[in-house]
Image 1 (tube, rainbow, N blue to C red):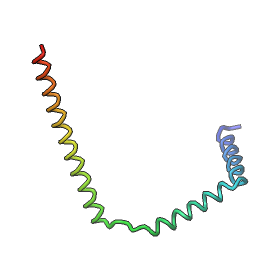
Image 2 (image 1 turned 30 degrees about the horizontal axis):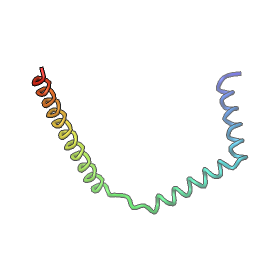
Image 3 (image 1 turned 30 degrees about the vertical axis):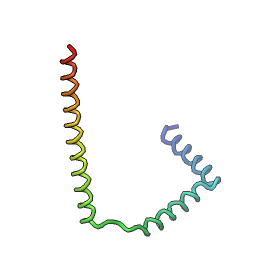
Image 4 (image 1 turned 90 degrees about the vertical axis):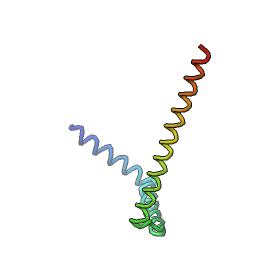
Length: 86
């Protein structure tokens, strides 16, 4: 028997088990409820999304620059202190 046939049989048995236990129906119900909830959401327009993306990118760059210079200053200060102790 080919491995693909074994895989298909195993998947069929697992699906039958899940169907009998009611998990497939629960998943279908969950999926439908999720769809209904997502229809209630207000989604941003393309322009709002672009603006938010720009804000996030700029904030990330500011944090990166701040972290770089903070690290640079702390490293320089520690090197200076080590030179004083030697």
